[in-house]
Amino acid sequence: MSDENDKTVSLPVSYYKNGSFTEGEDIVVREAPVTLYLNDQEFVTLVCSPGELKELAVGFLCSEGVLMKRENLKSILINEDDGLIWVETAVESTSQGMFLKRFVTSCCGRGRASFYFINDTRGVTQVESGLNVTPRDIFYLSEQLEKLSEVFKATGGAHSAALCTRDGVVFFYEDIGRHNAVDKIFGRCFLDDISYDDKILVFSGRISSEILIKVAKMGIPVIVSRSAPTELAVKLADQLGITVIGFAREGRLSVYTHHKRVTN
Amino acid sequence: MSDENDKTVSLPVSYYKNGSFTEGEDIVVREAPVTLYLNDQEFVTLVCSPGELKELAVGFLCSEGVLMKRENLKSILINEDDGLIWVETAVESTSQGMFLKRFVTSCCGRGRASFYFINDTRGVTQVESGLNVTPRDIFYLSEQLEKLSEVFKATGGAHSAALCTRDGVVFFYEDIGRHNAVDKIFGRCFLDDISYDDKILVFSGRISSEILIKVAKMGIPVIVSRSAPTELAVKLADQLGITVIGFAREGRLSVYTHHKRVTN
Image (tube, rainbow over all chains, first blue to last red; front, top):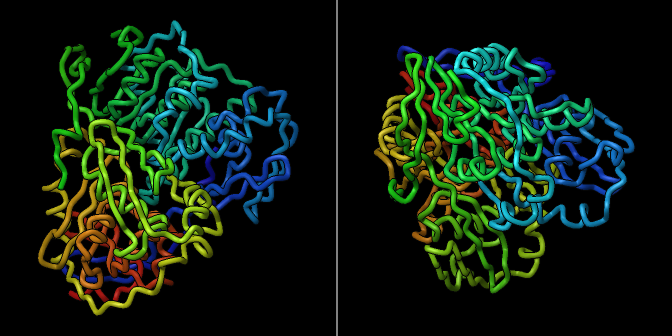
């Protein structure tokens, strides 16, 4: 789980208010580069919130389609102080070869057109789940996400993701990167062999196509955000059997796809 | 400038409010893949808001360090309907070769550690500018950004960037991607040969290290956001001579670096 202290730092700041400046200290969110070595080859460096590097590394490799079976993960070695992670996998050479092509797809607002149709159909299947949720469940879980978002409350500069059941939060992560927060969930579930078909992903950020694809790869039937979805995310969710709920706040919500799972 | 109509679409939605569902239509932000061919080679596909593809392509190439001199831009051909852009440049082979390494750095919350110290020092120099701004200027420009953010107001799913002088907005762009909005500013300024040393970038999103690097490459002395900066962005801004102003809203703001430019 998040350790707020690692993720923030106090910096000097000049506050302006009521017409004058005062010198003070502000809690600012940290960004730390972490370099991931896959099978002794430098693979990628992620800029992320410090901590939960095991979850991040595994979740990133799952998201990118490099790691798909638990038994293919041989070992993980982490040097937290220097931001170094060594992962050893039994992985088909193709996965590593295809990485850069896939990598280009995992960026903020940047991706290959083919992404949605070729590279990342690997591990993406229709989400089959009989899960039902009520608006009351959704509002309760959204409140829990807000309560847990300590880094955001302290800095205004973090994204939160919570894997939930109808009853409450199972795993919660905060990270400066929207993708990282969801990857940490993915990694934790992969490591703990958590099933997805009864889960709900409650997310602080916009539901973009890239976030939706991660949810589809996990096989989570419902994604909830207090923010907006994009058209492409809604189209993909419709095709992949995922319920997209946006603007879940203040007793309101909008269901964009597979409404059947949301019953009053 | 942004064309709201291209950037949004109406989708069916089930609204929940006051205990019951009603069927309706919602305005949702669009995500469109655009493939950029550089000197007849497929270079990258960006997922972005439709429109302003010329600015996006040029700004992306400027941000990535591929395009640094106006005379190196030979031609741009755009097929808006199919999302295809062909750019011809006179570019040293190294730039294209170094692209993928650089590309990996330009993602949301993902970057190489070396990014800040090797690859992207290309085109990054200390920002020298005698520009002074008052809190009153900043609040006025922040209000202008908000007024112009039609796509955000309609969908809740876009980021805004405005290149300003103390007197008002020069260029404004909205895009689903934070990086894209700033790249569109970069591209427009490159095409119109706009000087930066008297400019202010007013931005809707968090000031991350990657956004700060773009600002540094342009040579803009002041960046303003209604949101938070990250520690790494503040450190880079301090080193590069850029004034970082965060949380500029409701008559308050926080100056994190180079306070000398902000006078009451």
